[in-house]
Length: 75
Image 1: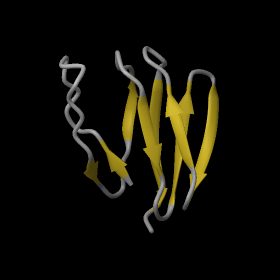
Image 2: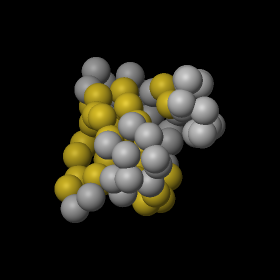
Image 3: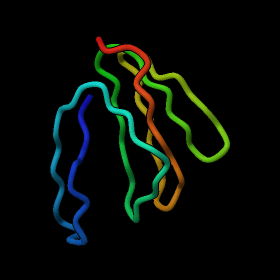
């Protein structure tokens, strides 16, 4: 999975990182968040809905939308 670990206030800055076994409690950002599942599976809660992302699937989370991640299976 790839993710941006630092959420800058600079609108022209974007940093992309790869990680494994991401589990993170409910939180929000002032920017969009794109989550791409490369291997394994992750449960993602967005608002009141839950999704299971599997290898090759992605989700786009809108600004100020509460969301969380729970790793189900590391690939």
